[in-house]
Amino acid sequence: MAGATDFVVRRDDLHDCRVTDGPVPEVAPGQALLEVSAFGLTSNNITYAVFGEAMSYWDFFPADEGWGRVPVWGFAEVAASPDEGLEEGARVFGYLPPSTHLVVTPERMSGHGFTDASPHRAALPAAYNAYTRVAADPSHRPEREDQQMLLRPLFFTSFLLDDFLADSGLFGAETVVISSASSKTAHGTAFLLAQRENVQVIGLTSSRSTAFAEGLGVFDRVVGYDEVPALPRDSAVYVDVAGDPDTRRAVHEHYGELLRHSAVVGATHHDRVGADSDPPPGTSPTFFFAPDRVRTRGDDWGRDGLERRLAQAWEPYVEWTDGWLAVKHERGAEALQRTYLDLLDGRIDPATGHVLSLR
Image 1 (cartoon, rainbow, N blue to C red):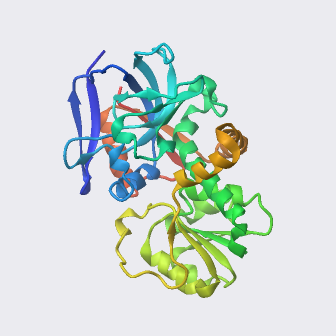
Image 2: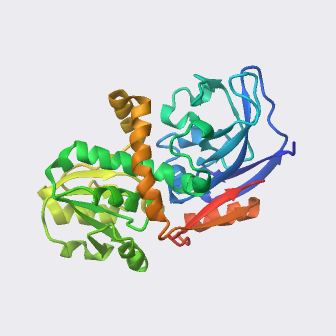
């Protein structure tokens, strides 16, 4: 087995990134070694980095002091395992570092998968610690692995958001306004909301992304960030995927008391996060933390019930993405570093998905 490679970024300067090489990690008793085969890289991973400190995303995959490994979603093979219940060569899907290897401590093993019980992950959200056996995944299709890496984690957030809003009766609102409309989380949420009755979905985006967002066909209306004051004033919910305080304030000021809920979901405009320390008027923005919703619906429906509903929603969604998603495959440290910086600086075409491998 060749040596190990890690892609790391400075936690206090996300533009400062590097690739490090070293020996393959040693496996202690009770541990297993995963060899990462491929992963998707999207603006969602930038959100993990931006909220790395606040939401403990850096804690999943520790690195040298001051550095962090940005979490990604992808596939890995079991390269070494101490337990017959997790055979070598088994393929899994889950939360991974942008690395060639990951040491895990498998527990709660079943035909479905296992949970990483490494001590440093014990206090972290359980939804990120589960690894699914590909052979037992009801949503897995070999021909759809690219879409699974690129879209399913984001679609899971969209699915949970749609479920949360529906379960809340849209807070009595008639309109849902979603920022960063060209992002995958935003238009995944719009795709699901568009299937519901009596709700208008408005997408907010930059002028360069308006045509793309309109062409998706899931927004009733797409407007520029500077057009918020011209929107009709009716009861609304704001889903903030951009994380831009200026846009948030404009939406809050425009709708006033008619804004029934304001959910903070992401930070595609990461350079603007925290730029406005004064809270916007009206209802207080509330962070939507997907693992909390997973826990709620896991209690309501059970794990199998949740995954069955997700699989049912995923099938039509992934077919819809065939109409606009182009996947680009690249390999090696240079490609990973370039793609990461392009995403960080907003130079990625929203119609392109990037699948990377360090092998």
